[in-house]
Image (tube, rainbow, N blue to C red; front, side):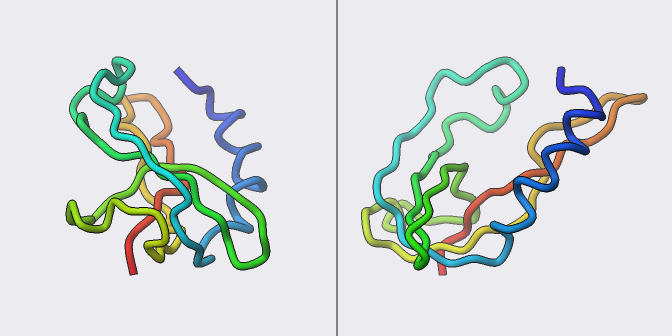
Length: 99
């Protein structure tokens, strides 16, 4: 489980990615995820190269199968990463949507 402190510290890392556009370099589909992500499986994870040359990876959401290809344009968005418990902080992070 990720602590609320780690979630708070990570916000500085993800803030500069939000809204940026880039293109998929490569992708894979996760068929056997860790326990917190089992309900999302199978799901694609993409590596994206932004126009400034930086790279990032994350889950591709709101996609069609034909979007899973190198060169597809995507945008970084803020989405829920995992479900929180009753007294847990809900973790949000960067995911990608096709554009």
